[in-house]
Length: 471
Image (cartoon, rainbow, N blue to C red; front, side, top):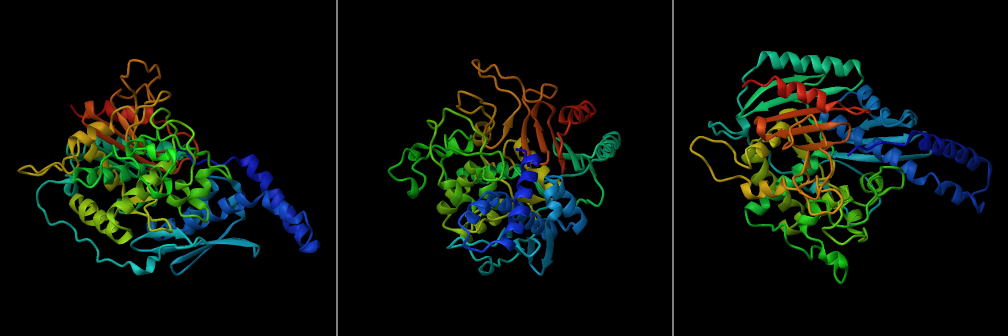
């Protein structure tokens, strides 16, 4: 969901930071109230610098963005990022405010980027260097070789949509349309190509859920399981099931607002590894009764998977050999936290086509379409469960890390999320208006990737695309 800064609040914090710094030069270090003065902007500083270092490191090393684009992307969150200096040296990125305070992130080709923090027992990325998963040589039609059947009218529509989005400062970077087993049209924004790895933000949640679905299909997981973590022993949190976490009906307290000091900001840009931070949240609702969107829930699923599969190396082996390789996903990366656990809530990177292939996997109910037929890659029954309303009393329009346009639950009077789009459609959504729609009645997938500070007109744009699909 949107990762928005509250600009007025942050500007006020900036003034406090500047005033604090100036005062620090004039007063002795043992001044009693000085520590309290600095505690006020602490979370804002950590968010500002941690976010700068982490996102810049990934954008530089994974997406290959130039410095100007990186700065512009950060500025779209808040003008305060203009005060941050960003420097890349080898595999590290340093974000600093003058010489006062800084944050650093490091990059590994296999594990992605992560903040270098003070937490103990952090995973050492240098110890993991697997051989690259080879490209599949299977010549049958598969998700690796979705044929392109260029539909000229749709191609023109996508190009025109990108032009209009550029004029409206929406910064659409990629559009792809799949119908059936074919890519009908695709278009890319300025300096973006079909090989650019783009951040999916919370679309990564669905990616992690599909990895869990693969585990469950192979008999390594059961969504009904509870008693998930030894840290929750003798706690009411032991009632929470994996399905509760998948549906974000776990009842755990979590503030997703992304204000400085809120859970989401501290989890992603603070000192504790993301999954370990989420593990500490308290129970506030009976599990299964209340939906509350929470990136922490996703990272708890990732932590459970990590433990179940036997640690970082075994999890990465499963990820590569049982998920990426069979699907032919050679450009997809899911970054780790400093415990070596996937940051499944937020940090998935892939080319636009590979993101779209995940939509195709959902559209075809977990089956990789190949000549002669093969067993389901993800069990059809799992896909069915993943796209059903959750069990909450307040908002059932969320499945297994998927947003549902509508629900046929009789007691639910909530409107469709997108009234002008098919009722049976469902979505992978992410910050900066990442949107992937699966529309089963249209046998179609529509993907939009970009970097928008304002809402993207999905109903208008996707509706136009659906209206122009070939019969």
